[in-house]
Every structure is written in structure tokens, then in C-alpha cells.
Length: 396
Image 1 (cartoon, rainbow, N blue to C red):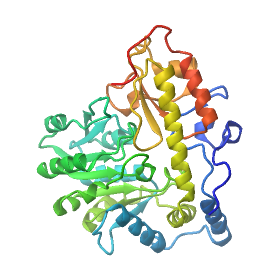
Image 2 (spheres, rainbow, N blue to C red):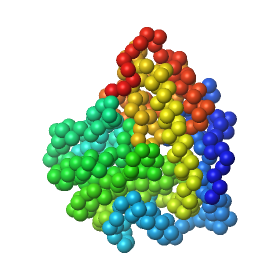
Image 3 (cartoon, helix red, strand yellow):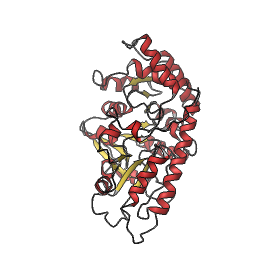
């Protein structure tokens, strides 16, 4: 595959009505919010989509696409997710969010408790509460060494009504890549309390530092039978408009259970989505390698700017994803709505902290998967609302 000379797109190329990211706010606002990358998609995917149009966009054969299933299985095994059954180990859905809802509906009853860590990608919380389950939000520990799991708080939160642990790995919005030790502690916790586990591993291929380890690969054989893994290609390959994801388990009965919970309501992937994922799984990796280096460069650009020009912001560089979790609580105007200050005065659209869990006023999430030029301009705008007096250092 030939990687295009410029994967980065300009604001003029991006600002069109087909893009929610670039059309939601007025033209004078730079959008660094929703998790789309401002990059051209891989040429192999463009070619596959064009080819699919020349063949068929009708109904797919019933069941999972054999080629995608085979390629995906090999990929997951390469990451360490081994021992999957020969058949019935996967159910394809129209996105990982549908998988979150399926897990909650299939594995917990109305009134049951579901534990998850906050801050967290908002659909984790809505998947719990939209259908009458109870969200037990366990706050991560803030540290200069990076966000940490509070296992003591988890023990305090669990009860006889708790049925499910929802894990985001790598973590959105902090970008933490949970270590083998942390995953093993989580597995021990889930097993001791007889919990089901659903682990969203959508951002696994966007690991910038370290090595991604699937949760189920560290679980005991018994816990693997109570675990669902969610993944998909749309974040890695910047194809969110072609919704597709998969629910994976070592337990075929668990797959059947969650399929039944969403039968007739969740939809299914279309021909173009399947063609896209097939191409992504067959891609030679050059495009992704290039993108990962670009993300590391943009992370360095952000980190340097925060340290030198945004003294009121505390931030730990993410180990994975292209998302940065910025803490503005030391800002002199922190008692106000910092999201709207940044939007209306700095003209930068980010994601507001409170939607990621209770108690996150003063935080915002920034998407740095854009060009050096766009990120640089956005950061300069953020600097315009910084105080002239000194504030505390920008680390925890």
C-alpha cells in the first residue's frame, strides 16, 4: 500500500456538512471534540469501498462474514486472546456502543448494580441507566504518575446487588493503558465477587506507549466464561460513519444471551462496513504506522504547550488513544463553566467533563488527532484565557 503524501487534512477540507465534528459549531470555532481523526482514510479501505460498490451493497449472507471472522480471530490471537471456541465466539453489531447496551441488558436485571470507573466514555453510563440499572461510579485516583484504579473504593462500592464490571481498556478519556498487574487485580476482584465483565478494547490498536494486553488473556478459565470483549475498527481506521463492532467471548452461551437481549433492536453491519473491516484487517500496516507516529508527535506538541503556556492546566500524557483529559480546576475561573469559556471566548470546542461522570466539572477532553497547524492554532486560542499571574504547576 502506498501511504498518501499527506494524511493530514486542512480545515477547509474538513469543514463540510457531512462531518458532525466540523459542522456542529460556527465556522470561527476549531473543533477538537468528538473522536474522529482529521486524517484521510487508508487507501486500501478507499479501494475496498469502491470495489464493493461495483459488486453489491445488498443483503449480506446470514451470520458473520467468514473472511472477517477468520482475519479477526487471527488478530485477536496475536494480541493474546487465545482459546476461543471454533464457532459461536463472536456476534457482529453496528458498533461497540451497542455492545455496551447488550452487555447491560443481557447480564444485569432492572435494579441491579453495575460498577465502572469514572471518568468514563459517556455511553458506559447511559447504557447502565437508560434501562433501569444502577451505576456505581468508582473514581480513578489522580496522580502525577498517571490515573490509577482505586481498588479500595471498588471494594467499598460492590454489594450483593452488583452483577457487572464495565472496563474501558485502553481508557477513554484518560488514555491509560492498564498494566498486566492492574488487569490481574481487576480479574481477581471480579472473580471474588462473582461478577460478569464487559471490556471495551476499541482503542487497542492506538497504543502509543507500552504493550496492549487483552483483559480476558489474564483472566482465569472460569472468569473468561463470564467475560465479553468489545472491539471494532472504526477508531483505529477513522471510519466511524461505517458503524461496525463485535462482541467476543470464550462462552458461546454468553454470546447467545446478549444476542437475545438486543434481538430485533440493535441492527446489523452493512455491506460497506464489512468491506471496510475486511480491508483494514488485510492492510499492510503502513498507514497505521504513519498515523501512530503522527499521534505521538501531536501528543508531544500538546504536552510541551501545556507545560510552557497553560500553567493552570494539569494533564498526564495518554499512553493510548488520541484523547487528552485536561484538568482546569486550578484556573481562576474554575467555578464557572470552563467548557463554555473555552467555546465562547477561546473559540475551541472540546468535550465537557461532567458528561464523563459525577464530579468532573472543570475538566475537558481534547482530541489531538489533527494536523500540527490546527492543533497549534487551537492551543494558541486556549492560551488566551490563561491567567497572567502564576498558578500551580501543571502536574498532579
